[in-house]
Amino acid sequence: MSEEVNWSELPEELLQKIAVHLFSDTELISFRSVCRTWRSSAADKRFPSRRLIRLSPLVHRERAHHHGAFLSRATYFRVTLPLASVQRAWMIKVEELESGKRRLLSPLSRLPINHSCQILDLLKFGVSEIEEGYAVKCFQKERTVSGFQRVAMVTVAGETQVLGIGCDGKLRYWNGEIWIKIKNQADTLCDITVHRGITYVIDINGIVWWLHSFGLVQYSPPLHSHGNDKSFVESRGELYVVDRFMKGKARKGRAIADAFRQQFGIRCLHAFIQDTDGARPCNIVKECEFETVSFKVYKLDEEWGRWMEVKSLGDRAFVMATDCCFSVSALEFNGCLENSIYFTDEDEDEQKPGFGLNGHDLRVFKLDDGSITYLKSFYNHFQMFFPSFLET
Image (cartoon, rainbow, N blue to C red; front, side):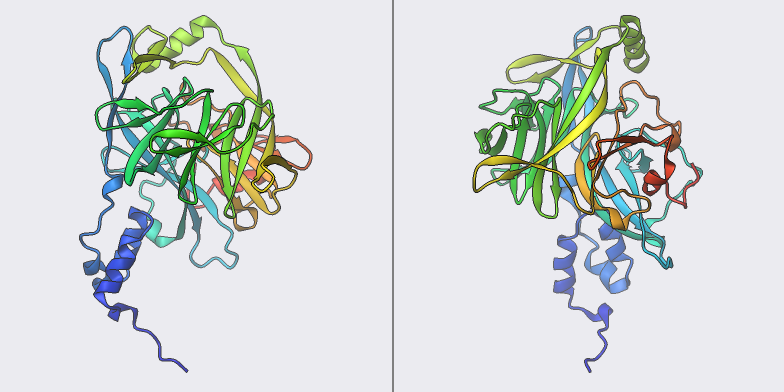
């Protein structure tokens, strides 16, 4: 029988290598909490690529100045009680603020939630990280800047870059001073992801492109699915495309103006993304509100170069948040439905923060029968978003 390992006596060189490859700051804190030896071995380890990145993406038409902004990171955690007999988990979303503090967000959006717990010590729970999502946020009031519908951190030409798809459907990267538009863009882009080390984007026609040396190269044929929005989801090492079908109705013009003035204190309804081609118009307040009515899921048959519709996700559930999309095992989360898609139609531009998780618009689409279940009508399917250790 082998002797029991004394983990505190591991070589310092090995501990340093482990610390360098940790996923995030939270894992680093957990690593340093094991013992004095582990803490000293990782004392100087940081994540330089995740420090505050200051951006100036927008110029308001009626105010000739840049809107100060920064890159905000939110992390999705799987949380379990340490002594629970059944390790079913909850999902929480934690945002790192510009001030260095952290706060809980609604799981499928970037709206803050109210809760009675003043301090949440994640070291007291079983915690693992699921996914990360990024957004461009204003320094003033730390509100999300709506000029970007998707933001990601990727490696391009050996360097970490911030990429953003504007609400004009164009892909840009931040060079430290200004946004630069990626070359070879034809149609409106919808989403961006990194899969097996390669950066992919997808356009409204379902054509997948891969990013190469700050240019786009076509990777797949068109999807020929006529949904309103397309997103990537990685599940068990495979890349899927989710097509969302929506219906919309026009908002009243006065309501648009009132909402805009309340949020920004100015009367204009448009802003501009400033890039090397000049100021590009970008609607900050959308003139229509949309409601999701259906989803379709596809997977690319790389051998035959064609799309195949996926009828079942097995025991998986897709989570479609406003800043990223990912897959989880339904068996690992409280009340989670397998073969389903969790989503929200919430408009972050018009909702006010601080009204509690119960006020947020959570829905689940069942892929087997095409039905949509709402939080207010069937709470049990959404238990994973309501941790028992938080009183909302």
